[in-house]
Length: 553
Image (cartoon, rainbow, N blue to C red; front, side):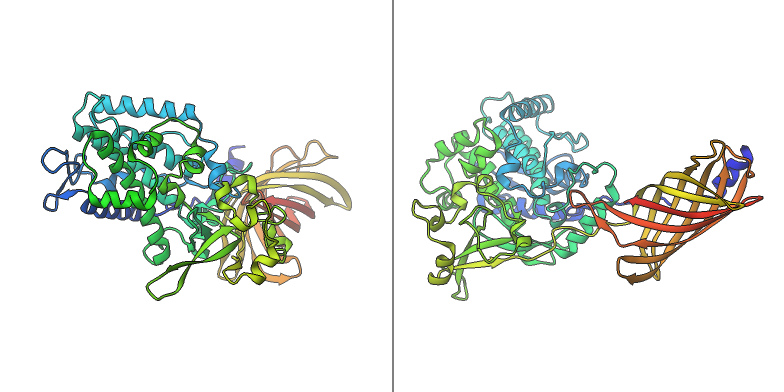
């Protein structure tokens, strides 16, 4: 047996691929974005004291925020450290769910429990002495993750007089939670975090496929709409500064979020609201008194209420994937004199989408129950709705726009593979049947001329011969080809170990076969490949025969 194990260890090569966690905006981008937002916002809404500090509130009595804020950690570095685990499920939007639907998972009890944790932390540490203790609150998705941590920042900023802390300590504690919140907010704009089914039933087994799906959408981009009616194509990590519309959108949302914290601090602390902050307030909530607005933000509600009822400005800027929109030409003009377009999502309900959409395009529409009423175009939601064909054919201000893209990333062959199937063996003219079950690891999808390069270890029991139990280890790959549903002609080589047989201890094994194209499992990132092969086991007496495998990858 020792000889068998030694041979097995020597011939079965396990390739370990280290995957760097750079699934959302990478750490550098998180830091640069958060620091840029912090400095740009405070320079406009606070008083700079040279290049290293800001006075907030009243120039003579307000707290001073140094830079860096926490033991040599800047706002951006703290944000980046909290955002380092980009692959956590809480860093992803839930595919097929609107902002409203995702926020419905944030309950008042979760917000109340989060506040107790944030309050305890602030009183225990006196703001944040360093960034080593990276405590975060549990969240079901990235939208909830942002709002939950942002609400903690708002509450701390609004309790500057009721806590046994100085105003500076309280505001620093609020900024700590806001730094965490902005990490989630930035990830909510990353294309790699929008269409990856991170919550699927096979999510725990398909980590590598999630990585590959993320990388696919990072470069492919995703068409998105926010609740303010803007549509653009967003991209993923390392591309934030490359594509201006993506950067502007995430920067504006992050800046808006930090302004909300400053507004709460000024209003609850009794400081006069600066002119620039008042202008922002007039633009985003023109008919609401600041006291009413701030008190509603500090109340404990279901997460969806902050979006649907209160319409918190930063929440309205978070994007969600879109397949088709109604585009309204407004009276506003840009710097080129071109009318701004305001978009509404087309919905799956009858009378709320373009009748000319194909079945495939209609598949990805949200329904009316999943969006606030104010996201439905007024002509279609009135008591006497306008027929959609009349709207787009007779009113020159309205148009139907389709944003066509593949919603499913092609499954990768990399990572853990699960093999299951059956096999026939022929020995001295006798045919015996059996099964096979095993595990493998996909090393490459494409390597020059090779496809689906992988290693595997399979257990092959025989139905008719109880004493025959083979452990087969192999390494192989396919030669690129595309004929109908066939993807590759495959060759594998390795060793077979007779664990419970009379065939000898170790024998070389060779197999030749074909791999099918991949059948995607659309509810997750996984796929299935069918493999047919003929194999030869060179024991003392030749054993050979065909096998059919289903490979989940």
